[in-house]
Length: 349
Length: 64
Image 1: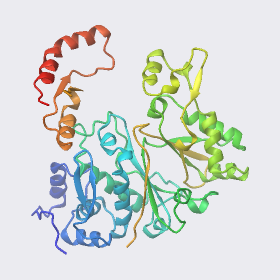
Image 2: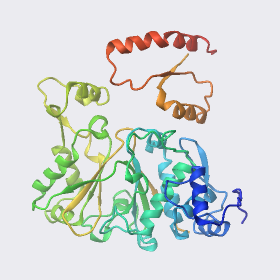
Image 3: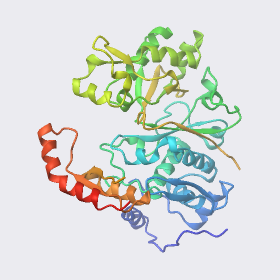
Image 4: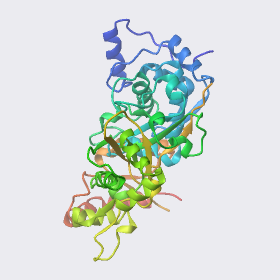
């Protein structure tokens, strides 16, 4: 197999080498693994595809990501070769038009592609879906998410202050990859809910903010727990408030059991949350309400109306079960109506 | 239809990259000072005065 990428002679000094990578603008700020031809070849072999196969065009540059280029960035991120099918699925997902990668790369909003992995590939590559699922500790989570970020930088040209204009950004922009805790979930897995078989593997990408915790150690009934969820989710200041769009709710395994033990399905949870989540006009000033009115027709209501549904439709609440023991859940507001989540099957060679 | 895109100064590089990526290198862009969202009506009208000639020029120099 012949590699297409240029071969560069570089310093053998680890410190000088890392300085050089950084000076080229090829990193996320952290040191990277040097992509030697041998490591890149091994990474490509993990995909089952040819080095020259094109995976996707990556916005905003529109440059084409070949399997070889994906492999180079996966090596740099610290991935193992058998992670490649997940990285490729994630890249295909963010390239779906409705995800709006061009907007997500460019915006002032602190959005990052959150990857949720489903199916047996989680066990095969060691994706953590339990305790500390959004945190440190699992190489697959850390490096698959990081590989996607390096692709967005090095192929998509998402450069902070130039083409990535995030006012603050977010720690989630380093790496943002989790697994659904299917084994502890009382419901069908996310990919099964969306028409795949349980033995399939899949990646969901959600253009989201960093996760926000929902702690409720007190509620023992769905009615009270969903009130906590709804109040934590329907807040001012995130894009969903003014633009609608999807929100992702990662329900902790103990919270999920409270809901399921009372007979609630995921659809029931969505409907009840949608009913409880309200955009209250007394929480915002006139200017903000007028600003939102231009983006959400539902706000254009009479003076007697004090609140409207926070989201347009229950289906805009994506529900996954994740994490370990403890009475916490997480809400991940999105880029708003300017993005739609995207799903891709993981094709294992 | 003759078109002009408005963009504030900090987003100049991003606008130029997207313009070129989309294959529209001739797309006219008028750059404005940042920020726009918090300007008063009077300030906005002052800005219109500043860029009006540039907008007219860019709209009228385009060939169909």
